[in-house]
Amino acid sequence: MEIRRSILCLGLLLLLLSLPLGVFAQAPDPTGAETLKNNPGAPADYVWVLVSAFLVFFMQAGFAMVEAGFCRAKNATNLMAKNLMDFALGSIAYMMVGFALMFGADRLGLLGTTGWLLLGAEHDVGRYLLYMFQVVFAATAATIVSGAVAERLKFKAYFIYSIFVSAIIYPIYGHWVWGGGWLSELPFGLGHLDFAGSGVVHVIGGTVGLAGAIALGPRFGKYNSKGQPRPIPGHSITLAALGTFILWFGWFGFNPGSTLSAHELRISVIAVNTNLSAAAGAIAALMFSYLRTKKYDVGMGLNGALAGLVAITAPCAWVEAWAAVVIGLIAGILVVVSVLFLENRGVDDPVGAVSVHATNGIWGLISLGLFANGTYGNYTTEAPLVKGLFYGGGTGQLIAQLIGAAVGFAWAFVLGFILFKTMDVLFGIRVPPDEELMGLDIPEHGSPAYPNFPYREYINR
Image (cartoon, rainbow, N blue to C red; front, top):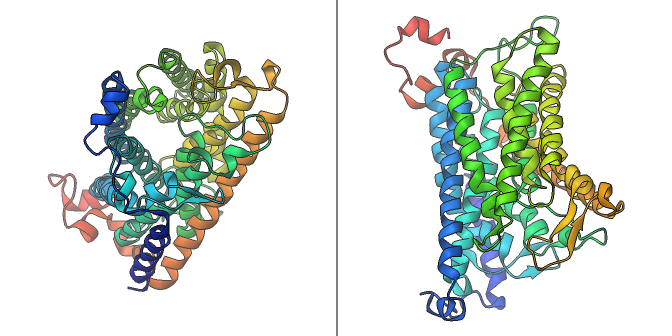
């Protein structure tokens, strides 16, 4: 009850703060007539951005399948419910508060202060277009967390953190990078850059997931009496593979769509780089795991593909094809190393979400400062060209990337950890031991994902 009151009071306070800045001013173009008059080519851009947004929305299905496949059958219903609700809750929270914080009129480079509930000047076809494209990104940041805290988090805790990520954590950092905030104005290079969200989406989501995994502790049976990690296999590598291919497909909306224009023909370069990095990441992770175990670990290969996609998301518009391959190869190795590193330090991440998204989100931001080749401008063709260290850009851009990565990690981890610990003190965020051993499907939802399994067999899977 206290948390609900706090969230409500925060929303009302932000709404009141916006009133002096003309939130309820008359909308400039709610029908689109003026936009068409001034730009006859606008429909192509609108269709491009909306189709890209729809592709990113389909990534929710990919995340659901990956998480279900890498987790046990007795938790599959719970994971479907969480992936459903983070998009549903996130859509409303981002409309009410998050979009204004991210793209409203800037105040001191820290946050936006206009456009709550998409009212006033935000009731415009262009702003609605941007909301649709960005809300699917906000939901992606929230859903990343669910994999890291899978199989032991109470459903009501998931409700609260989904709202908080979509309304506060994601949009405020997003404002600093994409909304005209202070990170975009750093006096190094061209300021901190992140084309499609290696940092804004993936570092934020993966790092909140890290905070949640630490606050929750590992699942029962993950570590033996000596503290050594033991594998807990997921129930369907088939579902995990299907989810990975869906995510790979959706990423062609995620990255090329971030041009926000069908007239930015750099979309071809972005699409090729996206594909190459994913391919290289899959190969690197599969072969690196083989060198370690003499087995071709398909699960690691799938996460390697996702790691390559995450890493290329920041630099995809600014690098050449060969660099995209290098970025993906390094990402594929990093994801394996990161999974082992975290496991050996007591962090139980059932699907590898932290290693895929946080670790390789940071690598993607850094790689931009190294490989940007100076043939494309600052988010558009009509802007100063972006050059990394290896192309004569000096250390400025690299410094800006490192600062942005460090700030994103610190922001997400501190707020995420405070949020999970606060909920834990107030009502406890972890399900009781007997429910965790039984699986969350029946205690939380009353419905197993696979009702034809014999019950005794089901609870022991």
